Length: 61
Image (cartoon, rainbow, N blue to C red; front, side, top):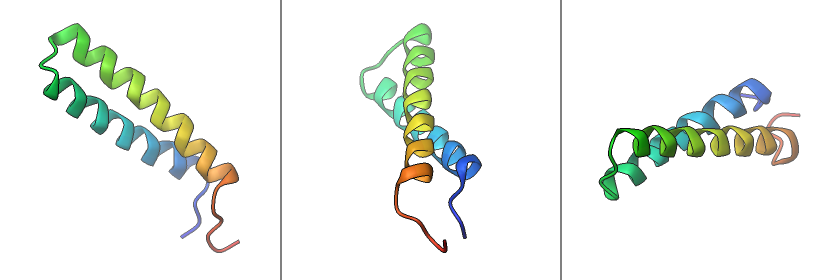
């Protein structure tokens, strides 16, 4: 399976939002804190996934 931009962004966003939700749960944040945490970590994850898909290890060139 080739890791392209779309898959990298999708997997990064999924991982980021899951991590952000976990952080919000551990810190017992309320509604706005949860939305902010999930949004910020989701964007960071999407950018990280895009970076890895573009410059990271290439599978099946």
